[in-house]
Amino acid sequence: MPEIRQLSASVINKIAAGEVIERPSSVVKELVENAVDAGSSRVDVSVEKGGLDLVRVSDNGSGIEQEQLVLALASHATSKIHDADDLFSVLTMGFRGEALASIAEISHLTMTSRTVENDAAATVESNGGRLQGPRPIGAPVGTSVEIRNLFFNTPVRRKFMRTPQTEMGHVSEAFLRIAIAHPDIHFTLRHNERAVHDLPPVDNWKQRLTAVFGRELAEHLIWIENSDDETRLWGFVADPVYHRGNNRMQYLFLNRRHIRDRSLQHALGEAYRGLLLHGRHPVAFLQLEMPPNVVDVNVHPSKLEVRFENSRRLYSQVLGTLRTKFLSTDLTARVEKPDVEPSSGNIPSAVSGGPSLADSLDRQNQSRLDLDYGPRPEVDFGGVVPARDQWAAPLGETGRPLHGVGVASNVGGDGEIAATNDTMPPDRTAGDISARLVTEATYTFQGMQAHNRYLITESEDGVLVIDQHALHERILYERFREKVLSGKLEVQRLLVPETITMTPSEVAVGLENKDLLHELGIEIEHFGGDTLVINGYPTMLAKVGAADVLRWAIDRLIANNGRAEKRDLIDEILHMMSCKAAVKAGDPLCAEEITALLEHRELCQDAHHCPHGRPTSLVFSRQELDRRFQRI
Image (cartoon, rainbow, N blue to C red; front, top):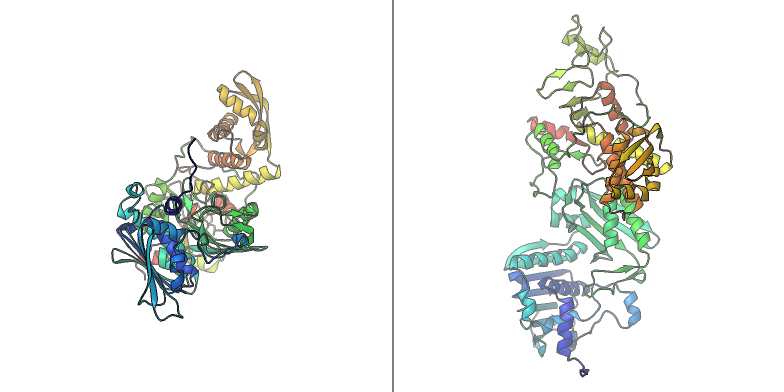
């Protein structure tokens, strides 16, 4: 039987280093956190070759007494906790007392420190865990830790390091996670003697975010705040036009400590559901403040993961706060020319500006899904009658709107205008029309259709361009969802039930989810073999086709492997149903249909995005139009 032995302190520290010190960025994180805990007002970080050759962190904090310098490099030595009870009241960034010992074991370390009470500083050196010192030296108040030749005695770990550029990227991210959360501290970062970040102290958090991420993003941040018992949530979330292909721009802080939490990230994603396209992630900077006794920060060696006492309540708080804010915020996409051209892929072209209105429409059109599903049904709003019964436009002698001032004209692809009336009365001149517009207050510009896909109308800010399919899809989705949740979805029962033959697996999925389909107004029975019988389906989809509705629904169930949450399945199927039933790009609309769409837009909870997250409209502000026409 193998003999049991007590591991040496050197081996123990190397094992700890393998858990805590993954790469140079881990060293930067631990040292900068110590500098923050020391009460520093300035922290300077310098690295060479991505941190593999040098990491130096200097601060002007409280410093360390000479007789405690050696103890500071010992394993599990800390000034931040004293007994086990202190683990439930941790408010400092670090507390384990293993980072410095681990770093010293796998590098050449020099630590110099001076307290305000002493005239001289002291320094101690470690060569792979072998200590020398302390000895007196001249240095300012504070602490400086210099790490050279990281992983020099653990060649396997060093072999797995990436290029200096890649490692520097990780260093910069670790640095920013701390700098962002502490706007009252001056942080600097240099790489190979070149300044990367210089972040002086600022008065508020938004100023720090502006300094790090730029003014354009900062101007499109939305403030959120909510307090629930002892938990306070506050910070900024970005307008949905700013999104990323990953979640790296989601910064969550607990008592100013950067954390990762899948539950909170899921809540953030749910809050943006319907505002972003599939595969895109929101940008957010959120702070959580809560008593330390309701959260366990001693879960992971790197202290990135925590465990909340009531994670469900926190999930609901994040989700509810963001959704409430979005419902009360105008999220209409605006066409603007930014001061700095955004990077490709991070910001949609809809807000990146461009030379012309047509170019912007073309860019948006390129991102559209294929909407060619054959003949369109008439515009259906689920039994809701438009608010207006007639047009508020001046009428000619024929009783029709006058050419040139009527509403809902169609602009064809060749640029010609086909008015809704026949011709202008011969006895009316342009001067007559202008005079009448001045003297009569009944004229209200409603909208016109361009290229049989976009509606153009006025807004308080300028000109509003609306995607007719996306808007109608949103209207139908909210009608569907409201009726499903209230149990008042009208079902059209078929006098002659319709049969549909499907594959055995499709039949099985349909029957397994029979109750769920019934909630959506799709009533089915098993006819036998590979055949289902449709007894009824939603009245709102009367012109779509019962068999198509059932196939679409079962396709979504199969796509989720039958394991998705009921709420998510219902939502996805409602997305699909509203998309299929909405008017399509390319469908010409009559005047009444255009009016109905515009008026129902005002009744939507979220008129800014279709259920899939695409914008329903763009605003060309008066200022932007004036700029492009060189009026300013």
